[in-house]
Length: 210
Image 1 (spheres, helix red, strand yellow):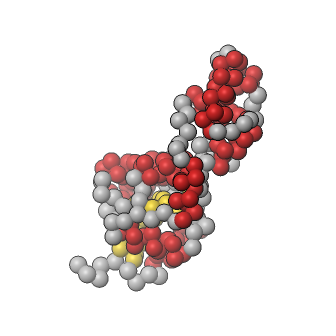
Image 2 (tube, helix red, strand yellow):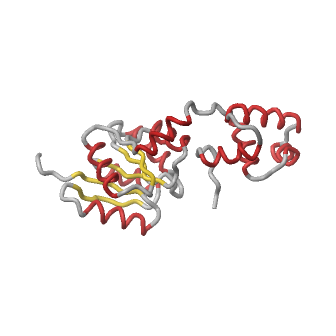
Image 3 (cartoon, helix red, strand yellow):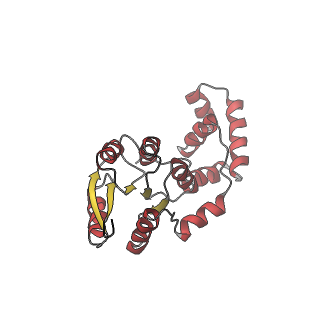
């Protein structure tokens, strides 16, 4: 029916951020927030209950992450329209979210106008990537094809561990660690461990835990 408002579910674990987005959305004549979730599992449960037109998902939430919630929702409701709203701007973060089925990816420093444009674009069946996000993806493709073990090693490099410590932690030989490090540097296109750690954080391959 014409005149129906876009029904929106907001999933964000920080209360102030959630209230802020809710306020912006509810000020629009063509939008209304039908439910608010504080974590990924709530987002999935509330999606089932309300079947909103659009779901705004923070990627970093306790329990189920936003990406996991997106995957779960899309598995059950393939037509779900999802927007990622996050502090993460690394190309691997963006790729993971797009693979999970989000149709728009916004970083939290986005202008109100972009948020509203994204909601309207996704609601009408389109996608929305702000220029900065699109540029990040374009500049960094293709994704580094790191194995699960290489990601483990990279995570420990980011944590400041030397090869000997990594070998001890993972219970593997030191020369095996050296081989992994060599492969990681080559795949990331960097010259040393410090550059590898920097690239891993900037691109969202590894996240620093607070």
